[in-house]
Length: 514
Image 1: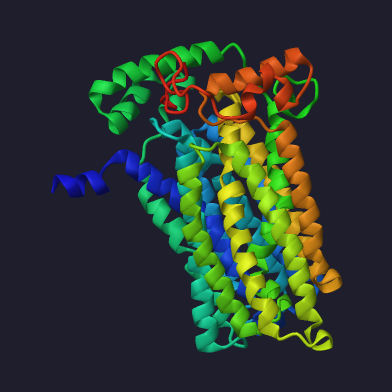
Image 2: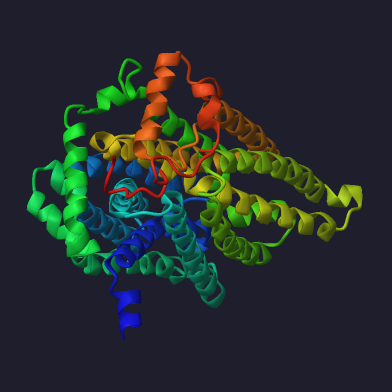
């Protein structure tokens, strides 16, 4: 019985499970819209053609909602607490999803308007969740690799993507592309996530760090005891109070983060460019428009859909390597290696897709190019997961002080939303006009992402919060943002020594900034 209690009643495990399930919301949306976009009844109900740019606009307005929702949620998280903010975001997500489900149900006039509203409202909630959950998780993570915890949560994101696409694929094959329930069922099934999380959130604590920052020490002590037990609570509370006193004199606002003259402009730009470069890897296109990409490689519609599901399953499995490597190899080297691998992959895909499109003229068997092209696409997807998926989310939680961590996470989601809005909006237009040459565009954008990361992105793994913030102070004194020119390039790699002052910086308790 004690084993079962440890597995299912341990508060730290409950926090990780809750955070992972919340992050899976976004993955579900990606998998859900992939086949909704090609459902004949959906297109007819919305009054659009399959190659109409409105297909991409309906998908992409979700990210505009995410951008706005992240800012609103971060303000609420700082004012009312992390838990209330998460609760509101989950409720808003559920409402937006319900509006999507009922759009055109028994009527057609105004269906697209309701779908637009549903996408935006759901984005407001999902963006808030993606903004607050990483902060909530990091502030409650006692010790061990921060990157590993985040990578595991984003592996759950891929689980959500797999779940949505599998449901979509099953009902599409059972009911056909002309049946309205083949696209409505996958949409309403998403309600499982917010309803489950809303029914479970009461069991979780507010973060002790937030309590201390609002001078609620007794509540902070009770939360610490709930997570770590009475014996450890007192010592951790003292660490939190000390850290809060040290940071209280250095309040940071959005103006300090978004204007070049602000003290936190440099870490903000690292955050912004991390999200921009992740969008430039092109994976947003692959995840949302996977079936269309396999069709470019020469496969039929049905085969393309099953291959997309296989790609997502492979993606989920390969994400295991992400949380194994991220705290051993570091964030920076994985991002650089991932961008390099994606550059090569997209160059190869350009060639294979070009051959597939001209196979009859060149008298080349379809399978001779479509099969190796599929293998390359599977590898590219895995390399994105290993190199980019979780890194750009964990870095903002490591480079900002507690006084601006929620704002930093919000800015990260805003840029993520705007960048993905652009990518998902332009991708169908690119497919319709550039065809396989779109892969060459992604090869170039990955090359840029690799270059920028090599020059300007510091290695934040293996270091305490204070060490990472010290990099930006030293960069200011050195008058350069080039990582290899600050502190003799010390931040271009993981720390050479695992221990500093008798403790591993990466493993130091997140609740206790020293």
